[in-house]
Image (tube, rainbow, N blue to C red; front, side):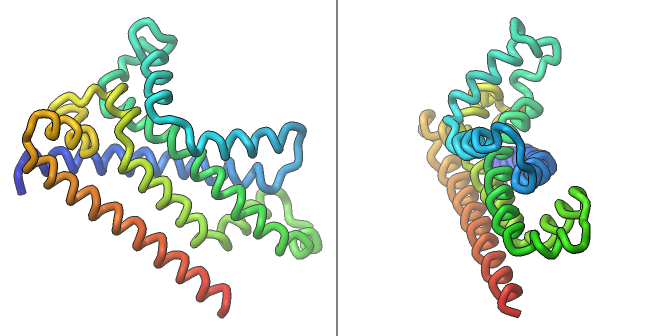
Length: 218
């Protein structure tokens, strides 16, 4: 219950959960729209989404730094070295993960539902709503995958956030800093908590997969 430890964990969870929520609000409909639509350049969009899933975090951090720095196009917002820009960084990182996984899940489900939806003269919006609802367990898996990626991120957030004590210090950046300072007790405490959260996320992924399989067999 060390106050410094609680402060770091609280900021980490606030930043990550906010970023993942925004990323899901954008990535879920984006991925579903790509799945059900046919337009020129669709394959290129799919390749781009899949490629961005592995985009190097440090490169993302550098790009956001250039955008939000004082001389950048959005420098007037003064987001640099604030939790806000850390949320932006994690959000940009998670959106491709959620969108790409959603696109794959919805496209597979559309193959099963296509004739039924056509026979009912379902509109595009009705089709998207139906597919998103029926695939909700699988889509939650994608959201948790994005959560796990965001929790473990260090490269982008340390560049744009600066790892400022009491302002932008989160678990991953604090572990790196405290290890370099030789404060292994705090680093280990944070590491144990971060590992526990990762285990919980993966346990959630497994439980959701099992629940989805049981429903599909029911």
